[in-house]
Image (tube, rainbow over all chains, first blue to last red; front, side, top):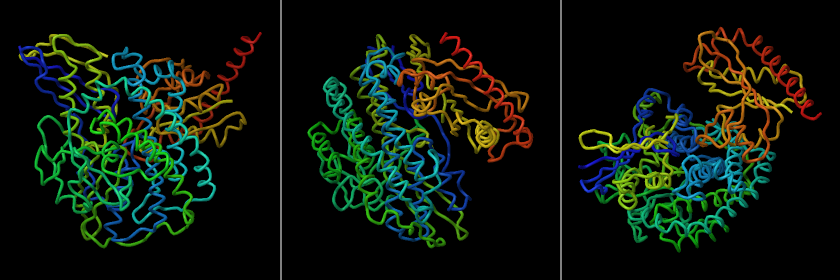
Length: 470
Length: 158
C-alpha cells in the first residue's frame, strides 16, 4: 500500500515548512516535496504607502536579515530618485551588509548546522543543539556566539540598533561614520578573522566524514546565479548578475538587475506558498538555478581578499555542485566579510560627511538588488505621481532556491529513507539538506514560533501507521 | 553586579513595558552596581554578557486580566534543553551562560501585565500613568532580591 511520510514542521530553520515523502507499495521513496506553509503578504499591504517608508517597512520582513531588505529596498528607492549615491555611502552600506551576512552565516553554521556536523546525523535529537556542541567542543560553541555578537555590534554601531536599524535611507545613509566607531569596529576584526579561520580549519577535518551526504546532497545539478563585478570577484552589494551552468560555463553574463523581468520569471506550484523563479530562456524546470554562498563562489574567479582567496582555492577542488558545501562556502564568506570590512574601513574617505543624495522621485519604477546571506535579493517598486507605492514585487533569496530544495529533498529521501522502518537519522538527513540552504521562510513568504518535529507515516487511506515526535 | 534586561517589541504598545521600566530604572535607580540593557528579545548572544554578572533581572510584558499587575519569580537555568536559535527564554539564557562560560548568575523575572498589544509606539494610557509606580516597585523587588541573594551567599560562605 502506498504511504506518505510527513515531516511537519521542519526544525532548525527560520520559519515554518513541511516535508512530505510519498512511498510506493514496496515502501520505497516515490516522490517528495518541500512545502512552505506560511503566508505574510508584504507585497500587498505596502501598496499605498509613501516610497520613502519602504526601507523601514521591508526590513520588518525579517529579524535575522533585516539589513538585506533595508539595502535592497534603499537601492530600489535610489532608482526611484534617479540618483547616484555618494561612493562613501555605498561603502558604508557595504560594511553594514557584510556585518549582517557574517552574523547570519554564523547563526546558520554554528547554531543550526554544527550540531549535525559535530555530533553526527544520527545523534540523539535531544543533544543535537548548541548545548550539545558546547559539551563536546565548548570553544566551537563560544566562537559561534562571538561571531554573532560581533556582527550585531557592528550593525548597532553603524545603524544605531541591532535589529531593524534605520540608518540606510533612500539616497545613502543618514549619518556619517565617526572615527571612534571605525576604530572600534577595526579593533574587533582580527578576532573575527581568527575565529573564521579556526572554524574553516576544523571543518576541513570533519568534512570527509560526510562523503555519503556530500554525494547525496549533490545529486541535483542546477545552474548558479549571483552578483559579481568587473574583476569577477565575490560581490555582495552591487554589480551585475551572472548565471553559470553545471559545468561552470557562463550561460548569461552582465545581466542588469533592472531588466530582471526579461530573463527571470516565477512559477507557482500547488504544494507551496513559495514561488519558484527560473531562467526564462530555458523554461521550467530546465531554467532552475541556485543562489547563496555556494552559488556565489561558483560564479566568480576569486573572492578578492587574501585569506578568503586561499580558502576559495581549496573550495574549488571540491565537488562544488553539492549543496552540502553551502556550509563550506558560508565559512569562506564569513572570512571574506571580516577582511572586506577591514579593507573598506581603511579607505581614505570613509569618514566623509557626504553620505546622502537628496532628491524627489524622478522615476515611477525602481529596482534594487543586493546579495543577502541566503542569496540574491531583489526589490521592485512602482509609484504614482504622489510617490505612493502602486506595486511591489520582491524576489527573495530563499525563493530562488525553492525548486532546488524541493528536488534535493527527493534525492536525499531516495538515498536515505527506508519507508518500512523510520528512524531519526534518516529524517534528520532529509531536514539537513534543507538546512544546508539555510532557508529563511519568514523572508521568502514575506513567522515565528515553536518548531517541534512530527513525522507521520500515513497510508493512502489516511490511516496513521507510524509516528515519530521530537 | 546586577544586569537588568528590559525587553519587548516597542512597536507593539505595552509589549515594550519591560523596556520602559528598565529605562526608568536607569534614570532613577541610583546604584553603581547596576547595568541596564534594552532588547527586542532575548538572543543567545546575551549569554556571554549575562555570564559576567552575579544577578540578572529580566523585565518583560505578559498578558493577563489586570493591566499593570507585576509578578516576579526566580528563574532557574535551563540546561541543555530546547532549540537554541535566535530567540531564547530567560532560563535558557542562564543555562547558556553556564554551559558556554561556566558561570551561572541568579535570575529574576519581573513580568508586567499589558493592556494593549496592538501596533503602536506608545504605552497604553493606563500603563503610562502607572509607569512611575511600577518603576519604584521593580526597584524594590530588585533591592529585596539582591539583599536576599547576598544573605544566601553569606550563609553559603560560612
